[in-house]
Length: 390
Image (cartoon, rainbow, N blue to C red; front, side):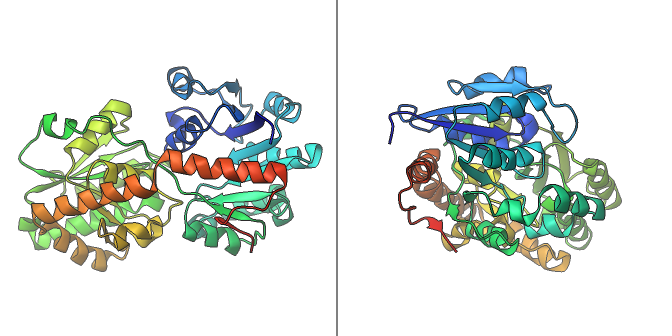
């Protein structure tokens, strides 16, 4: 292989506007060996890029003006198609960069890689509206999916979802990683109150199951109020499809004003403070690729409550997580059991989560796998054993 291989990376945003993708894409490539790879990131200008783009240093970024909500950019297309990149890797689906990689493949005949990041999850596909289904079938036919050289799955479940969609190309299993907290003493220094804090952090969207969680807590509050008297649910995140309004309505309907606190979106040091203050983390999601927030919670020694659809079965196997369900009656029983656990049990679970992350979910490990994949794809060598060909 040449000393430097040129790789283009396209993502919808290099700012916090992209949610969990910001860390997932940025930190992955910042862990790359720059002596072997020249990485160029292509993305779009938005209200936060001026603040967040410097966090990508030393990776070079080229930003373009989007011309519509589909993120079409004639300038980006021209720049990418005329670049010297030997491989193009897009992160996410269903927008213009998804069209662009198909054009890249047809025009350049070079290597193409796609990371769906959970966007082929059955929950998402099943809940597409009729119009979206028609548009998707027209712009993204299955034939085009099967012209891509390789896909990246974050978990076995995402691998299965990619296959279920009808994609027959090679799939590499490369999980997300995490940057371990640099200052764990914040947990001791953070100002505490008399309550225990259960944290949800992420986008406020029906997929995350927060509405089911709130309704379950409402029933517990009415039937067994003593169970919740020492707990607060902290909801941290940005609203999509005006879903926060719906959640606030449920809080009022269920008389949970003393139990639930909405904090809005938090980033960087403010986000760290939320983890440092928390006693546990919850993600009652209907479907994920591999949720960064669960890894972050474990890195802060927090026990986790999550559905199996979060696709980190290692958490259950290592006693770092409690499985919960999105069926309200079942969730109520699971929450009551959790709220009565003693502090020692919670702390032991959190420490097991930290050990799990340190052993299996670091960006250095993920970057090394992706480097190996890129090398094999560009050199024509046999693909590594973490790539499934069927």
